Amino acid sequence: MPVTAPERSQVSDTRRKLLALLCSGDLTTSELARELGITANGARGHLALLEQEGLVERRVVRRGVGKPAHEYRLTAEGSLRLSRAYLPLLSAVLSVVNEQGSAKDEETLLREAGRTLVEQRARPGGALRRRADAAADLLGQLGAIATVREETDALWIEGACCPVRALVPDHPLACKAVEAMLEEYIGARVREQCEKHDPPTCRLIIGAADQ
Image: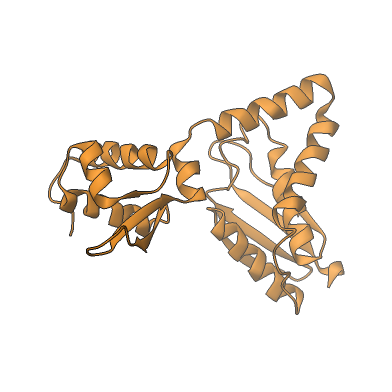
C-alpha cells in the first residue's frame, strides 16, 4: 500500500528509523509498526520503498499457528546507507597513510584497493571496445554516469558522478583506485586524466596499443 501524503522529511526520518531498528535483527511488519507507533499498512508502504531500493529484504516466516508473516532484514546496502561513518573513516585512513608515509604510499594503497574491488568479478572478454563498454557499465554500477568515446588511437571513458567524488577534493589520488580497478577488470592499460575540480569528472584513456 503506498504511503499517503506525508512530508518528504517525515518519510525520510521514518525510513531511517526502520533501518535503525533492523540493525538489531530481523523484524516483522507488525513488530516494526509497533516500535514506530504507526499502522501496519503505513509500515508496509515504507518497507516496500526500502525494498525497491535494495536496502531491506524480506522472507516469509511461520511462527506457530496462523498466517505466515513477512520478516524484514537489513541488507549490506542498507547498512551502508544508514551509517555516515564510512566516508569520513576512509578519508581519515588515507590522511594517516599520507602523513606517516608519503603520497606514494597512499597511491599504492589506493591502487591495491581498486584491484581488490574487482577480484571476485568475472572479467569481460572480446575486443578492447567491448571491454571498455563493460568498464563503463561497471562504473555505472558504482554510481557514475559513464560513456565510451572512440578516437583513432585510443578509447576514452568519460563520465559525471565520479564514484569517488566525495574523496577527490581532499585525496585527488583516489582516482588512481578507479584507474587500477579498471585495468584489473579489462586487462588493458588505463590512465586517468580526470578533472579534479568541484565537481570531479571522470576521464580515463585506454591506449590502442593494448588491443
